[in-house]
Image 1 (cartoon, rainbow, N blue to C red):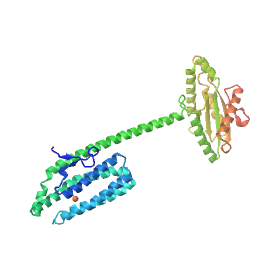
Image 2 (image 1 turned 135 degrees about the vertical axis):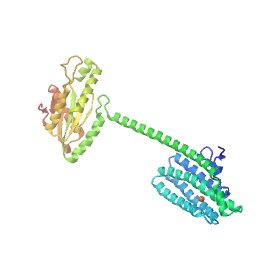
Image 3 (image 1 turned 180 degrees about the horizontal axis):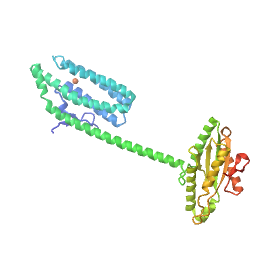
Image 4 (image 1 turned 120 degrees about the horizontal axis):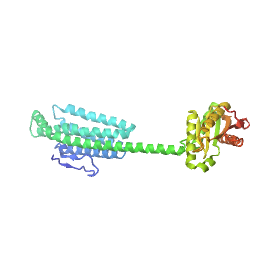
Length: 378
Ligand SMILES: [Fe+2]
């Protein structure tokens, strides 16, 4: 097609929508005003490309309102000599003004969403109003100035339809390309954002997880325990802490290697997962040391939980070859009213009871809050 396109005066490289001489009506004042609108469309396009801010969008909306006021007044003064056809044209101008007011309200609420809507509206206006309605009005006016009657001039104005269709097709192609580009950019951005969020989630998970057992690490256990303690203090509950230390674990590592030792730690981690309740808080707090905070538990319930853990751990083989050898654990228990407790106190008392269990011969549970005597076996 023989389009006589040229760039707008605002900068050839940056303009997405090119001025086409077929937009020209032949009335210099109108064409000059239309080019102002065309430049505003390209400015809006650049604003959209840089994450639209309210001030940038408001400035364009102000200029559009000012453009419309003087341009419509001029066109309507030219149409004042017509006997017919000018009413619908005036209504279209009034609709444009209403649309600008609506866009102004939307822009105040959400400039990023409003800017593309405004661009779509202006391009449609370029296609349907300037290229069709204004063009017909200008042809009719020029024909009347050349001496034709209004009826003949109206007929003359209709004859410019075919070139207009070519111009509209070109504009449509530009709009479609721009839309495809916008969709591709948004899709890419959405993917990048979702990948980054997934990475952040994974980093956060790694930061709070003991990678060998998959349990909470010491820091995360303490965070969760602090939260639970605060909740229990509000509700006036009892709560218990268990400190679990695997017996002779260094000896297992020395005899059978660290790989075997690691496999035991993983199995102990699985024991916690299947033995404890959903509300219990647990983690690996040292090399072969684990802690459990049991909310809303009295001494008896805490002892039962400790005993279940001790028995489950004692089913894990403690040797790669001798099936009679089992892993064992010593467990210290403390139960306190939450209002009297803090995490350090619970940790210290449970730890001390755990060492009592070690000294008493290992593979047993001891309660700190009952004079560090051995807890009854279930
Ligand atoms: Fe118009």
